Length: 74
Image (tube, rainbow, N blue to C red; front, side, top):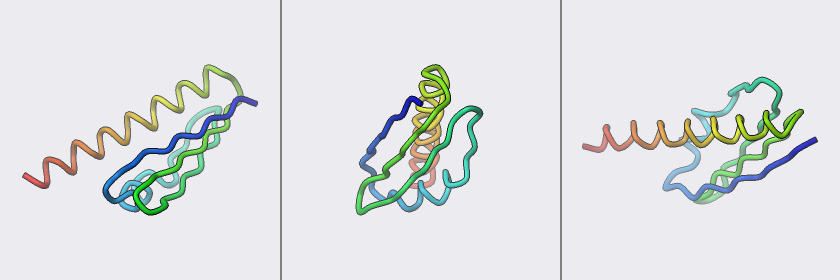
């Protein structure tokens, strides 16, 4: 089973964790943990293709949240 771990350094990872927690991806199991200034994402997938899709979706969602937070800061 393909597996990946991503560590993303963020200003307040608990905010991201609360928004992303519970997201479901077809063919993948994703777990997240917020620790200090880091969001740790672990992905287990049924296939390499599902792993790549899940990784891309997680990164895309983090980017969207970041952009939305920047709009509120203005």
